[in-house]
Image 1 (cartoon, rainbow, N blue to C red):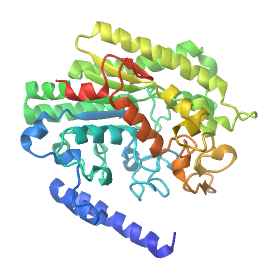
Image 2 (cartoon, helix red, strand yellow):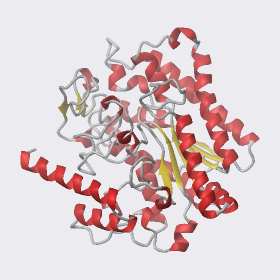
Image 3 (cartoon, helix red, strand yellow):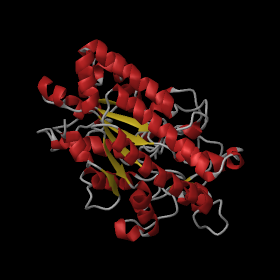
Length: 411
Protein backbone atom coordinates (compact mmCIF):
# COMPACT_ATOMS: atom_id res chain seq x y z
CA UNK A 1 0.00 0.00 0.00
CA UNK A 2 1.26 3.48 -0.85
CA UNK A 3 2.16 5.84 1.99
CA UNK A 4 -0.51 8.42 1.13
CA UNK A 5 -3.17 5.68 1.16
CA UNK A 6 -2.02 4.61 4.62
CA UNK A 7 -2.23 8.19 5.83
CA UNK A 8 -5.74 8.63 4.45
CA UNK A 9 -6.79 5.39 6.16
CA UNK A 10 -5.23 6.52 9.45
CA UNK A 11 -6.91 9.93 9.29
CA UNK A 12 -10.26 8.35 8.51
CA UNK A 13 -9.89 5.95 11.46
CA UNK A 14 -8.95 8.86 13.75
CA UNK A 15 -12.00 10.83 12.63
CA UNK A 16 -14.27 7.86 13.25
CA UNK A 17 -12.91 7.34 16.76
CA UNK A 18 -13.25 11.05 17.53
CA UNK A 19 -16.89 10.91 16.52
CA UNK A 20 -17.53 7.89 18.73
CA UNK A 21 -15.98 9.60 21.73
CA UNK A 22 -17.75 12.95 21.48
CA UNK A 23 -21.22 12.79 19.96
CA UNK A 24 -24.63 11.26 20.64
CA UNK A 25 -25.46 7.75 19.42
CA UNK A 26 -27.60 8.87 16.48
CA UNK A 27 -25.15 11.47 15.25
CA UNK A 28 -22.32 8.95 15.64
CA UNK A 29 -24.06 6.41 13.47
CA UNK A 30 -24.97 8.93 10.78
CA UNK A 31 -21.56 10.61 10.74
CA UNK A 32 -19.55 7.40 10.70
CA UNK A 33 -21.64 5.95 7.92
CA UNK A 34 -21.23 9.14 5.87
CA UNK A 35 -17.48 8.96 6.38
CA UNK A 36 -17.12 5.34 5.41
CA UNK A 37 -19.83 4.76 2.82
CA UNK A 38 -20.53 7.13 -0.01
CA UNK A 39 -21.96 4.37 -2.21
CA UNK A 40 -24.75 2.91 -0.07
CA UNK A 41 -27.98 4.95 0.16
CA UNK A 42 -29.52 2.65 2.76
CA UNK A 43 -27.80 1.13 5.77
CA UNK A 44 -29.41 -1.44 8.05
CA UNK A 45 -27.97 -1.63 11.54
CA UNK A 46 -29.69 -3.49 14.34
CA UNK A 47 -28.98 -0.58 16.69
CA UNK A 48 -31.07 1.60 14.40
CA UNK A 49 -34.42 -0.17 14.54
CA UNK A 50 -37.37 1.64 13.02
CA UNK A 51 -39.27 2.76 16.10
CA UNK A 52 -39.39 2.58 19.86
CA UNK A 53 -41.89 -0.28 19.88
CA UNK A 54 -39.70 -2.37 17.57
CA UNK A 55 -36.67 -1.63 19.76
CA UNK A 56 -38.55 -2.75 22.86
CA UNK A 57 -39.56 -6.01 21.15
CA UNK A 58 -36.03 -6.87 20.04
CA UNK A 59 -34.38 -9.61 22.13
CA UNK A 60 -30.97 -8.40 23.33
CA UNK A 61 -27.91 -10.30 22.11
CA UNK A 62 -25.20 -10.86 24.73
CA UNK A 63 -21.87 -12.33 23.66
CA UNK A 64 -19.30 -14.05 25.89
CA UNK A 65 -16.03 -15.74 25.15
CA UNK A 66 -12.66 -15.47 23.48
CA UNK A 67 -11.04 -14.29 20.25
CA UNK A 68 -13.58 -16.10 18.09
CA UNK A 69 -16.14 -13.53 19.29
CA UNK A 70 -14.16 -10.55 20.68
CA UNK A 71 -15.22 -7.45 18.71
CA UNK A 72 -12.57 -5.25 20.30
CA UNK A 73 -12.71 -5.35 24.11
CA UNK A 74 -8.99 -6.08 24.31
CA UNK A 75 -8.31 -2.73 22.61
CA UNK A 76 -9.14 -1.13 25.96
CA UNK A 77 -7.28 -3.28 28.49
CA UNK A 78 -3.65 -3.41 29.56
CA UNK A 79 -2.43 -6.40 27.60
CA UNK A 80 0.08 -7.34 24.91
CA UNK A 81 -0.12 -7.57 21.13
CA UNK A 82 -0.45 -11.34 21.53
CA UNK A 83 -4.01 -10.71 22.73
CA UNK A 84 -4.82 -7.76 20.47
CA UNK A 85 -5.71 -7.38 16.80
CA UNK A 86 -6.00 -3.60 16.53
CA UNK A 87 -3.38 -3.28 13.80
CA UNK A 88 -3.09 -3.92 10.06
CA UNK A 89 -3.82 -6.25 8.26
CA UNK A 90 -6.58 -7.34 10.66
CA UNK A 91 -9.87 -6.11 9.20
CA UNK A 92 -8.48 -5.95 5.67
CA UNK A 93 -11.39 -7.68 3.92
CA UNK A 94 -14.45 -5.86 5.26
CA UNK A 95 -13.84 -3.00 7.65
CA UNK A 96 -10.66 -1.99 5.81
CA UNK A 97 -9.26 -0.92 9.15
CA UNK A 98 -8.44 -2.97 12.28
CA UNK A 99 -11.27 -3.19 14.80
CA UNK A 100 -9.80 -5.61 17.33
CA UNK A 101 -11.37 -8.66 15.73
CA UNK A 102 -8.99 -11.59 15.13
CA UNK A 103 -10.08 -11.93 11.52
CA UNK A 104 -9.70 -10.32 8.14
CA UNK A 105 -13.28 -9.12 8.63
CA UNK A 106 -16.38 -10.06 10.57
CA UNK A 107 -17.01 -12.79 13.14
CA UNK A 108 -19.79 -15.33 13.63
CA UNK A 109 -21.56 -13.03 16.09
CA UNK A 110 -21.60 -10.20 13.53
CA UNK A 111 -23.28 -12.42 10.96
CA UNK A 112 -25.78 -13.89 13.44
CA UNK A 113 -26.81 -10.43 14.61
CA UNK A 114 -27.11 -9.26 11.04
CA UNK A 115 -29.32 -12.19 10.02
CA UNK A 116 -31.63 -11.30 12.89
CA UNK A 117 -31.71 -7.66 11.79
CA UNK A 118 -32.41 -8.69 8.20
CA UNK A 119 -35.29 -10.86 9.38
CA UNK A 120 -36.83 -8.05 11.42
CA UNK A 121 -36.25 -4.85 9.46
CA UNK A 122 -37.61 -3.38 6.25
CA UNK A 123 -34.26 -1.75 5.39
CA UNK A 124 -32.29 -4.70 4.06
CA UNK A 125 -31.03 -3.59 0.65
CA UNK A 126 -27.61 -2.45 1.83
CA UNK A 127 -27.21 -4.41 5.05
CA UNK A 128 -24.15 -6.20 3.72
CA UNK A 129 -22.30 -2.88 3.64
CA UNK A 130 -22.88 -1.70 7.23
CA UNK A 131 -19.36 -0.95 8.44
CA UNK A 132 -20.15 -1.09 12.15
CA UNK A 133 -20.30 -3.91 14.66
CA UNK A 134 -23.91 -4.83 15.28
CA UNK A 135 -23.21 -5.47 18.93
CA UNK A 136 -20.48 -3.19 20.35
CA UNK A 137 -17.70 -4.22 22.74
CA UNK A 138 -18.57 -3.60 26.38
CA UNK A 139 -15.40 -1.56 26.95
CA UNK A 140 -15.69 0.62 23.85
CA UNK A 141 -15.92 4.23 25.11
CA UNK A 142 -19.04 4.89 23.04
CA UNK A 143 -20.82 1.84 24.45
CA UNK A 144 -22.52 3.50 27.40
CA UNK A 145 -25.15 1.22 28.84
CA UNK A 146 -28.00 3.58 27.94
CA UNK A 147 -26.96 3.37 24.30
CA UNK A 148 -26.81 -0.39 23.82
CA UNK A 149 -30.30 -1.74 24.61
CA UNK A 150 -29.91 -4.43 21.97
CA UNK A 151 -26.94 -6.19 23.47
CA UNK A 152 -23.32 -6.08 24.52
CA UNK A 153 -20.23 -8.05 23.52
CA UNK A 154 -18.22 -9.07 26.61
CA UNK A 155 -15.79 -11.43 24.85
CA UNK A 156 -12.03 -11.05 25.35
CA UNK A 157 -9.34 -12.55 23.15
CA UNK A 158 -7.23 -15.03 25.09
CA UNK A 159 -9.91 -15.55 27.73
CA UNK A 160 -10.58 -18.94 29.23
CA UNK A 161 -13.21 -20.49 31.43
CA UNK A 162 -10.52 -20.83 34.11
CA UNK A 163 -9.44 -17.69 35.95
CA UNK A 164 -5.76 -18.66 35.71
CA UNK A 165 -5.73 -18.94 31.90
CA UNK A 166 -3.51 -16.08 30.65
CA UNK A 167 -4.30 -14.37 33.93
CA UNK A 168 -3.70 -10.63 34.06
CA UNK A 169 -3.82 -10.04 30.31
CA UNK A 170 -7.42 -10.99 29.44
CA UNK A 171 -10.98 -10.69 30.74
CA UNK A 172 -11.80 -14.22 31.85
CA UNK A 173 -15.30 -15.66 31.71
CA UNK A 174 -16.04 -14.89 35.36
CA UNK A 175 -15.05 -11.24 34.86
CA UNK A 176 -17.30 -11.16 31.81
CA UNK A 177 -20.12 -12.39 34.04
CA UNK A 178 -19.45 -9.50 36.43
CA UNK A 179 -19.77 -7.06 33.54
CA UNK A 180 -23.03 -8.73 32.52
CA UNK A 181 -24.33 -8.20 36.05
CA UNK A 182 -23.52 -4.50 35.73
CA UNK A 183 -25.73 -4.40 32.65
CA UNK A 184 -28.44 -6.17 34.64
CA UNK A 185 -28.22 -3.53 37.38
CA UNK A 186 -28.50 -0.75 34.82
CA UNK A 187 -31.55 -2.41 33.26
CA UNK A 188 -33.23 -2.70 36.66
CA UNK A 189 -32.52 0.98 37.34
CA UNK A 190 -33.80 2.00 33.90
CA UNK A 191 -36.76 -0.34 33.42
CA UNK A 192 -37.62 -1.62 36.87
CA UNK A 193 -36.94 -5.06 38.25
CA UNK A 194 -39.72 -6.95 36.46
CA UNK A 195 -39.20 -5.41 33.02
CA UNK A 196 -35.45 -5.88 33.31
CA UNK A 197 -35.91 -9.56 34.08
CA UNK A 198 -38.26 -9.97 31.12
CA UNK A 199 -35.67 -8.28 28.91
CA UNK A 200 -32.98 -10.72 30.02
CA UNK A 201 -35.34 -13.67 29.72
CA UNK A 202 -35.96 -12.77 26.08
CA UNK A 203 -32.23 -12.26 25.39
CA UNK A 204 -30.05 -14.65 23.40
CA UNK A 205 -26.65 -15.42 24.97
CA UNK A 206 -23.80 -16.65 22.76
CA UNK A 207 -20.70 -18.43 24.12
CA UNK A 208 -17.37 -19.46 22.63
CA UNK A 209 -15.03 -20.33 25.48
CA UNK A 210 -12.53 -23.01 26.47
CA UNK A 211 -10.01 -23.12 23.63
CA UNK A 212 -7.45 -21.04 25.50
CA UNK A 213 -7.70 -23.25 28.57
CA UNK A 214 -6.21 -26.03 26.44
CA UNK A 215 -3.97 -23.98 24.16
CA UNK A 216 -2.26 -22.54 27.24
CA UNK A 217 -1.31 -26.04 28.38
CA UNK A 218 0.83 -26.57 25.30
CA UNK A 219 1.99 -23.06 24.45
CA UNK A 220 3.23 -22.10 27.94
CA UNK A 221 4.73 -25.39 29.21
CA UNK A 222 2.11 -25.38 31.94
CA UNK A 223 2.58 -27.57 35.02
CA UNK A 224 -1.15 -28.31 34.82
CA UNK A 225 -0.36 -30.95 32.20
CA UNK A 226 1.08 -33.15 34.92
CA UNK A 227 -0.99 -31.88 37.86
CA UNK A 228 -4.29 -33.21 36.50
CA UNK A 229 -5.48 -36.06 34.35
CA UNK A 230 -7.17 -35.12 31.09
CA UNK A 231 -10.59 -35.92 32.54
CA UNK A 232 -9.96 -33.89 35.69
CA UNK A 233 -8.83 -30.87 33.73
CA UNK A 234 -11.72 -31.07 31.27
CA UNK A 235 -14.14 -31.31 34.17
CA UNK A 236 -12.67 -28.14 35.70
CA UNK A 237 -13.11 -26.24 32.45
CA UNK A 238 -16.66 -27.39 31.69
CA UNK A 239 -17.74 -26.91 35.31
CA UNK A 240 -16.61 -23.30 35.16
CA UNK A 241 -18.64 -22.80 31.98
CA UNK A 242 -21.81 -24.31 33.41
CA UNK A 243 -21.44 -22.36 36.66
CA UNK A 244 -21.48 -19.10 34.68
CA UNK A 245 -24.44 -20.30 32.61
CA UNK A 246 -26.27 -21.15 35.83
CA UNK A 247 -25.57 -17.66 37.22
CA UNK A 248 -27.00 -16.09 34.06
CA UNK A 249 -30.03 -18.35 34.41
CA UNK A 250 -30.59 -17.16 37.99
CA UNK A 251 -30.51 -13.56 36.77
CA UNK A 252 -33.14 -14.36 34.16
CA UNK A 253 -31.33 -15.67 31.08
CA UNK A 254 -33.04 -18.61 29.42
CA UNK A 255 -31.80 -18.77 25.82
CA UNK A 256 -28.21 -19.89 25.21
CA UNK A 257 -26.13 -20.61 22.12
CA UNK A 258 -22.80 -22.43 22.30
CA UNK A 259 -19.90 -23.14 19.99
CA UNK A 260 -17.97 -26.18 21.09
CA UNK A 261 -14.20 -26.20 20.68
CA UNK A 262 -12.68 -26.26 17.19
CA UNK A 263 -9.87 -28.75 16.37
CA UNK A 264 -7.17 -26.65 18.03
CA UNK A 265 -4.54 -29.33 17.39
CA UNK A 266 -5.00 -28.57 13.67
CA UNK A 267 -4.40 -24.84 14.02
CA UNK A 268 -1.26 -23.80 12.12
CA UNK A 269 0.38 -22.73 15.39
CA UNK A 270 -0.09 -26.22 16.88
CA UNK A 271 0.36 -28.21 13.68
CA UNK A 272 3.83 -26.72 13.12
CA UNK A 273 4.92 -28.18 16.48
CA UNK A 274 4.40 -31.68 15.10
CA UNK A 275 7.35 -32.84 12.99
CA UNK A 276 5.05 -34.88 10.78
CA UNK A 277 2.98 -31.83 9.89
CA UNK A 278 -0.17 -33.56 11.09
CA UNK A 279 -2.57 -32.21 13.70
CA UNK A 280 -1.19 -32.27 17.24
CA UNK A 281 -3.08 -35.27 18.54
CA UNK A 282 -2.57 -34.74 22.28
CA UNK A 283 -4.29 -31.37 22.02
CA UNK A 284 -7.05 -32.90 19.92
CA UNK A 285 -7.74 -35.51 22.57
CA UNK A 286 -8.41 -32.77 25.14
CA UNK A 287 -10.69 -31.03 22.66
CA UNK A 288 -12.75 -34.14 21.96
CA UNK A 289 -13.13 -34.90 25.67
CA UNK A 290 -14.21 -31.33 26.31
CA UNK A 291 -16.81 -31.37 23.56
CA UNK A 292 -18.30 -34.64 24.77
CA UNK A 293 -18.44 -33.30 28.33
CA UNK A 294 -20.07 -30.05 27.18
CA UNK A 295 -22.88 -31.91 25.41
CA UNK A 296 -23.64 -33.88 28.57
CA UNK A 297 -23.40 -30.80 30.79
CA UNK A 298 -25.89 -28.86 28.66
CA UNK A 299 -28.30 -31.78 28.56
CA UNK A 300 -28.17 -31.95 32.34
CA UNK A 301 -28.83 -28.21 32.61
CA UNK A 302 -31.82 -28.57 30.29
CA UNK A 303 -33.20 -31.36 32.49
CA UNK A 304 -32.72 -29.42 35.73
CA UNK A 305 -33.60 -25.86 34.72
CA UNK A 306 -37.18 -25.09 33.65
CA UNK A 307 -37.50 -23.14 30.37
CA UNK A 308 -33.78 -23.47 29.64
CA UNK A 309 -33.36 -23.41 25.84
CA UNK A 310 -30.08 -24.00 24.07
CA UNK A 311 -28.46 -24.52 20.71
CA UNK A 312 -24.99 -26.06 20.36
CA UNK A 313 -23.08 -25.83 17.11
CA UNK A 314 -20.43 -28.48 16.47
CA UNK A 315 -17.68 -25.98 15.65
CA UNK A 316 -15.17 -28.84 15.78
CA UNK A 317 -16.69 -30.84 12.94
CA UNK A 318 -17.74 -27.91 10.77
CA UNK A 319 -14.25 -26.39 10.77
CA UNK A 320 -12.44 -29.74 10.52
CA UNK A 321 -14.43 -30.51 7.37
CA UNK A 322 -13.16 -27.28 5.83
CA UNK A 323 -9.58 -27.99 6.93
CA UNK A 324 -9.59 -31.52 5.49
CA UNK A 325 -11.74 -30.90 2.41
CA UNK A 326 -11.24 -27.23 1.53
CA UNK A 327 -12.25 -27.56 -2.13
CA UNK A 328 -15.68 -28.81 -1.13
CA UNK A 329 -16.35 -25.50 0.65
CA UNK A 330 -14.77 -23.11 -1.83
CA UNK A 331 -11.16 -22.95 -0.58
CA UNK A 332 -7.85 -24.03 -2.04
CA UNK A 333 -5.82 -24.02 1.21
CA UNK A 334 -6.95 -25.75 4.39
CA UNK A 335 -3.80 -25.96 6.52
CA UNK A 336 -1.63 -22.89 5.86
CA UNK A 337 -2.79 -19.56 7.24
CA UNK A 338 -3.12 -16.46 5.09
CA UNK A 339 -1.12 -14.30 7.51
CA UNK A 340 1.96 -15.27 9.56
CA UNK A 341 5.32 -16.85 8.94
CA UNK A 342 7.09 -20.19 9.21
CA UNK A 343 5.73 -23.62 8.42
CA UNK A 344 1.98 -23.40 7.74
CA UNK A 345 2.44 -19.72 8.70
CA UNK A 346 2.07 -21.07 12.19
CA UNK A 347 4.31 -18.45 13.80
CA UNK A 348 1.86 -15.96 15.31
CA UNK A 349 3.40 -12.87 13.73
CA UNK A 350 0.57 -11.46 11.59
CA UNK A 351 0.89 -7.69 11.51
CA UNK A 352 4.48 -7.58 12.75
CA UNK A 353 3.57 -6.21 16.21
CA UNK A 354 4.25 -9.38 18.19
CA UNK A 355 7.64 -10.82 19.28
CA UNK A 356 8.33 -12.15 15.76
CA UNK A 357 8.12 -9.18 13.39
CA UNK A 358 8.40 -10.99 10.05
CA UNK A 359 5.15 -12.06 8.40
CA UNK A 360 3.76 -12.89 5.00
CA UNK A 361 0.28 -12.07 3.72
CA UNK A 362 -1.46 -14.20 1.11
CA UNK A 363 -2.78 -12.74 -2.12
CA UNK A 364 -6.35 -14.04 -1.80
CA UNK A 365 -7.68 -14.51 1.71
CA UNK A 366 -10.90 -16.13 0.46
CA UNK A 367 -8.90 -19.15 -0.67
CA UNK A 368 -7.77 -19.87 2.92
CA UNK A 369 -9.59 -21.53 5.81
CA UNK A 370 -7.22 -19.94 8.33
CA UNK A 371 -6.64 -16.21 8.56
CA UNK A 372 -3.74 -16.31 11.05
CA UNK A 373 -2.04 -18.96 13.16
CA UNK A 374 -5.05 -19.44 15.45
CA UNK A 375 -8.10 -17.98 13.72
CA UNK A 376 -10.34 -18.54 10.73
CA UNK A 377 -11.19 -16.22 7.86
CA UNK A 378 -14.33 -14.14 7.59
CA UNK A 379 -15.53 -16.47 4.83
CA UNK A 380 -15.47 -19.42 7.25
CA UNK A 381 -17.35 -17.45 9.90
CA UNK A 382 -19.96 -16.35 7.35
CA UNK A 383 -20.56 -19.92 6.17
CA UNK A 384 -20.84 -21.26 9.71
CA UNK A 385 -23.17 -18.47 10.87
CA UNK A 386 -25.42 -19.21 7.91
CA UNK A 387 -25.52 -22.89 8.86
CA UNK A 388 -26.13 -22.09 12.53
CA UNK A 389 -29.06 -19.77 11.92
CA UNK A 390 -31.65 -22.39 11.00
CA UNK A 391 -29.97 -25.55 12.29
CA UNK A 392 -32.26 -28.22 13.68
CA UNK A 393 -32.30 -31.94 14.40
CA UNK A 394 -32.31 -32.60 10.66
CA UNK A 395 -29.12 -30.64 9.95
CA UNK A 396 -25.49 -31.58 10.67
CA UNK A 397 -23.39 -30.10 13.46
CA UNK A 398 -26.42 -29.30 15.65
CA UNK A 399 -27.22 -30.30 19.21
CA UNK A 400 -29.88 -28.79 21.40
CA UNK A 401 -33.54 -27.96 21.72
CA UNK A 402 -33.90 -24.94 19.42
CA UNK A 403 -32.36 -23.31 16.36
CA UNK A 404 -30.85 -19.87 16.80
CA UNK A 405 -33.58 -18.44 14.58
CA UNK A 406 -36.16 -19.92 16.96
CA UNK A 407 -34.38 -18.50 19.99
CA UNK A 408 -34.45 -14.99 18.55
CA UNK A 409 -38.09 -15.37 17.52
CA UNK A 410 -39.47 -16.95 20.68
CA UNK A 411 -40.49 -15.00 23.81
